Image (cartoon, rainbow, N blue to C red; front, side):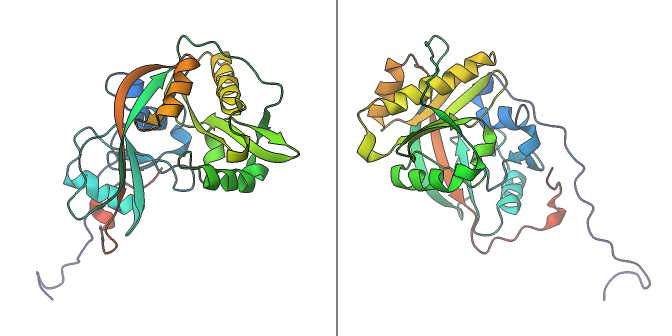
Length: 261
């Protein structure tokens, strides 16, 4: 034992809580951060300067523009060893020992001038529909949809003979904006315009709240981008999607500070 005889050893004090990070620029420039400090603040799990959704809601993480080593340590602590996180709009590389699980160029489209319309056949989906939603997502791969993603906003679907064959819904929610996401159609029912109808119906609900719709798409998904442009969406900016995984042996001590909220 080292130190002065009789001295009591105390663990390092955690870092004091930091104020909620400000959203620089336009809210759509940092949509996850704007969501988690705005309408989706009730979802926010926080550590240091980082915010993220619960892992069964959404994989998106909000990082500072220029993350430092402490930020990446906090990200590792949030995700846990071997855990995965997703970033949208960031072009900064993760630490060298982190695995990049996916990296793709994308576009962000805004629907400020589009005409929307409700759809009589569309039904609102709820928690009881999640198993069927997950099955449709597995077959169509529209992007991440998890057990509690449906809590992020309104999801609409179209059924044929009782079976869910198409859906679209709301994901990120920066102030004044709502992202349309999980747009997908069963392959056997494509070519009938179901996805377009659902996008217009979701956008109609967004507009009814006094907000504007926007969405993201992979740059390589030219068919989807063409569809969205015919519906009135216009390119706002290019972006990037990045998935990262914490090293399996990563161990970050809790004294790095923070906690979740």
